[in-house]
Length: 471
Ligand SMILES: [Fe+2]
Ligand SMILES: [Fe+2]
Picture 1: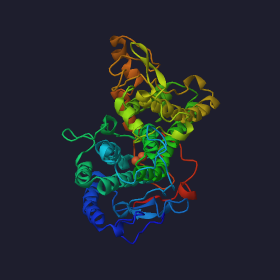
Picture 2: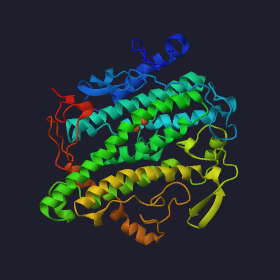
Picture 3: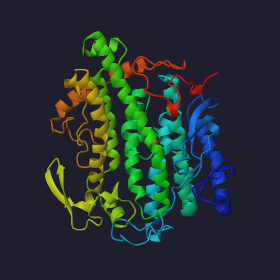
Picture 4: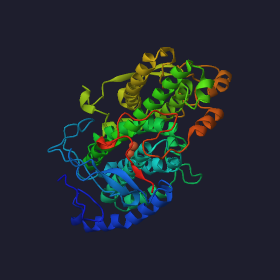
């Protein structure tokens, strides 16, 4: 079941060959996807050999096969995690009933919406990152960027497959729209705000892959719990790919910290101006980037109180990440203490699931910070330890939207907020400085001065391997 048929136009493990109508529909969408990739994917690197990972099966041996591929020739396909025999719905009012292999009529539009919203983020991030190749800090990093890009393209395929296979004509129309909206487009933007923010430098890329791809992980984990089995299986396999994206973020920021600490030691100072003059990112500046991308990603979980997420849970459509680790899977009797600008409110747990998810997401975000901070402490700069901003800081959605809150979570006056904001998130001057660091380095084994080299290469290859063949 898990073997992928590569002899077909669209590699897949869903027996596409025996569903001619679906196969034809997807083969009709395929050239449009490739047009989109050529027009909106990474610029200028399309004819180069890139050392990429491609799945040939979804089991542990086959999902990570490496080789030199030109990106437009990447075998984007449809890969579902193996079915679980007798799988039952694991939460909500229908808990214990068999999972659905078809879309239940009453949940059709809501499931379609969940799939489209997830699907929209995948090509959006490729669009956001399309110019970054020009300023890569090394060939190793360039290759990682392209690996992420092709996999986000495959994640789009994963969602488009569900739309085509289970949602008929509406689904096909939505699949077209996924290629018609574009990140940052004035008329047809992507659905979620964070996916319209430009990612114009590599420090932003590392933060995006750390914070925003981690939101992706949490969304996929909660959809992997779904009673709609094809969605669950699709998301389970996507999660194996997603892990690499967060690896790029965590090691990327870790390497920035490492390089900064080297410069601080060398110069014997923590003076930001001198660190910047030496071509490195001072820790205060990194903190601002963390504040920006963390707060922006927190909005992706939605309002603290949400009747939609309550209904999605009660109906078995979207669970909590790692649902089995909780005791109560129905949540009709539980409540949640929610902090709002007006004080503490007691709300039904079912309505507070976005907040529950946001809290577990932040715990996951802390893991990387602890690692980076250990390095900072070891170097003797413990006072400059990095922190996550409060969940209330700079929110655009929910109870804290538009409130003047500092990164520690205190309500402050509007005046102080607008005066201090530029000391909490990157100012124009900060962004200009970061941009000045973004000089392209493409000699094998060489690395830009603002980031330390990686500890090891890809797939046991040396760090100085020519991961992208430019000649
Ligand atoms: Fe993705
Ligand atoms: Fe991702």
